[in-house]
Length: 288
Image 1 (cartoon, rainbow, N blue to C red):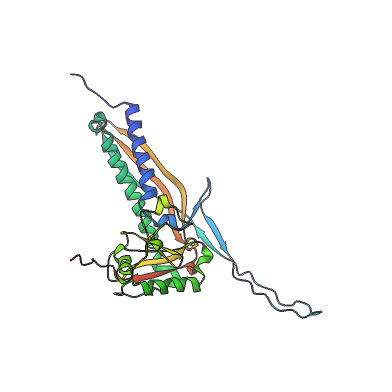
Image 2: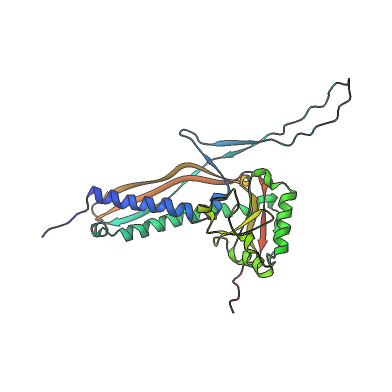
């Protein structure tokens, strides 16, 4: 009886398909990571220390009188590090022998979606601590056009734009509240405003109000008091030490190959003053 066994080339091809799919879905499956700062730890580096300085106030001078007061730069620092996350897949010999690219694409999509979802959820978990934990909105409140405009005014008044482009992220049911209480003109919905990547964020962009783009993600838990956020890019940061990597190991008795995917990253609140949580009702909507 002839026995067909997987070759190194077949296994490498399977890995290539999985990796390619992961790179695609991880970049396109969740909006939050593309709305915040990105930093990278270099080889041999464990921590990134990010400094921040306070405002400096100028004073009036009197001719012939020496300047006696000095300004304090008020420097503070934030230390950022990373941790590993990973997933293990079992590719059986039978699966590899069949050389079904659709199966590999499916596995790659699962891994990519899982990684994108984890990063998105990790960033969403930071929302509640922004603005010193003081939230805009309230439990049970609907996100109306008026309330959204008020949140944007709060952001502008408190200079969120000092951290870069400002955006709103909330649950689709909460964002629906705006559309349900006012007509958003077509000109307000397209195109996606400058400063955002159409390729990465187009699927999540809904409309712009007062120069602030509104995005949605279903990874925010639907509840009476769902927490979204309004923030600028500098409010939070994604730090990466190791990008997506894979390694395979043959298990003869199992008649399979283990494919291990690992990445090393962390997400952090970078500047509390550049964002604020938004608490609004996002429970399931009536459809009839």
